[in-house]
Length: 161
Image (cartoon, rainbow, N blue to C red):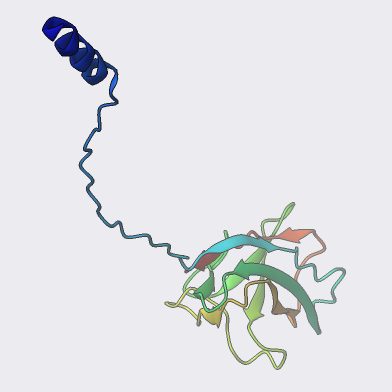
């Protein structure tokens, strides 16, 4: 009988649930985000003076569209163009090669020459988080003796932010 009690007691212990003691560790992590100052688009419309008289001044405008994040500072510069020299811009006749002077400005009064910082000023602005329209004001003309031709130039606009 004595052996039976030991076997019963051993059987009870064998069927008893075991309690596991798990260890627990905790730590922290830093979560952060940054919204960088960024510009997402930049484009320009053509500037056409149309048919001009070489003895009178002609005016035209074009538009640069800029889309920069709210508060993002930016600068827009315009180079001298393909045929420019020493800060002067020229349209070149496609048939004659004759140069026809023109100028680009930041203001409607055409007093703030728009350039690259070396020749003329860059236009500085601040993004709004939406599309912004910047107007380029152009003038040409009063160049007697300019021959009949089609005149063109290519200006590179650069957005820096």
